[in-house]
Amino acid sequence: TQLLEQSPQFLSIQEGENLTVYCNSSSVFSSLQWYRQEPGEGPVLLVTVVTGGEVKKLKRLTFQFGDARKDSSLHITAAQPGDTGLYLCAGGNTGTASKLTFGTGTRLQVTL
Amino acid sequence: ETGVTQTPRHLVMGMTNKKSLKCEQHLGHNAMYWYKQSAKKPLELMFVYSLEERVENNSVPSRFSPECPNSSHLFLHLHTLQPEDSALYLCASSHALGASLGEKLFFGSGTQLSVL
Image (cartoon, one colour):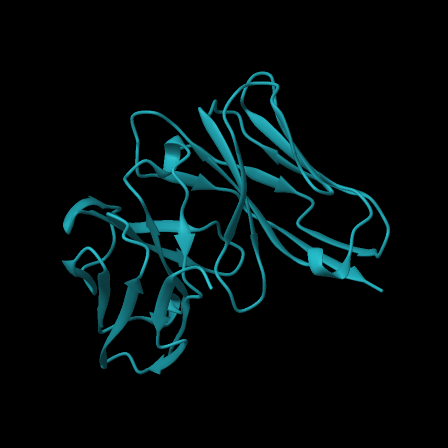
């Protein structure tokens, strides 16, 4: 069974601070997705990374896929209250086209 | 607005009740999914449909019964549930199968289910 552990589980920071969320596994994934879920809503896809070592930027968010494709990180620069939510990573593999393995989640609270 | 609509948003039911969750997507997608989101547990895939045919059933108890009458609609019929089934039930769709290969999933807002 493939597992994705996210750390930290909870993070409460003030507006303007930087933060990094980690997504780790002992298994290799062919792709890694990051989602953000706001209270009362479903997850929304932020990014997909597919190449080991790949770095993608989405405004103030920087996503990295580990060289060995077993881990990933999400870095947020100058966090804003609108970044508040549950961040989920999800790994996928060829051969299991429909099944993503979701991580345990990191709940982020950004206050003024 | 993601293009995936779930009803009801909240549902409270007794263990002997029968109820149904509804999902509708307006995106022209061919694949639809049911996920369960419980507190302190990762999202769990329950069922997958592609072109109205069930392609995955992840060892889900028979008290959960999915139905996909067409590619735009997905139902989850609930019968004699247990309190531990209380969770957020999320519906999702994608253009084609291949969520694990980078195919983008669009989620609905979910139905928050409480079983008493």
